[in-house]
Image (cartoon, rainbow, N blue to C red; front, side, top):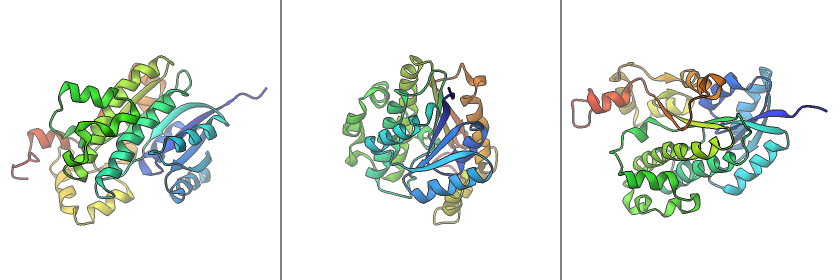
Length: 281
């Protein structure tokens, strides 16, 4: 009897997700999903051309039905051992409502549904953002609401009402703060299955999208950010993958429910250095 495949699911077909998959997916079946099929096909083509067994799928993480269809397809090939979630939209890409629907609600659904099917010993990482670390602290009650509110009620929370969300950046920050809190809460549930989940909060990472931003109308803002960070430069997708590899491997077996800030010290500079708001930055 043929042994079941180990299946890895990537949501969000971009450079960070691909860098992580290339570290972890040797010998596994990979499903590459994105809300744009052409993105999933492009990453799949790159993976297949270097020897991986990968299949592209169209999936919208803001739709529970779409996520369930993705899970069904993955399970038809074997046991889901790993989830790498790099899906999301940036503040310059969409509206407040869409950012909350995808980055906040969609991520919550994804973690919930994959937590029901991940195999024993499985692991996941979800890509959050340094932006979630820059907001003023929320109250303990607000953090608990973001962590514990049933997924279908999340967007009805008072703190997420559109009139209280100032702009797309604020929506993005709230979504990323929620991601980190949901990972903590989900880690408890995933632990009951003998599985782990963590988040990574990258700063400016060089990808095609980031290059568009750096060369666009907000380019000076981004260049100033990484120039005045301790590292003095933006990061690379493989530097995010270095941390993801630890978290997803057996070497990270005692790490779950945690968030890892990888931003070259930009957040440190924002609070305590030359990037402080109102300072000479």
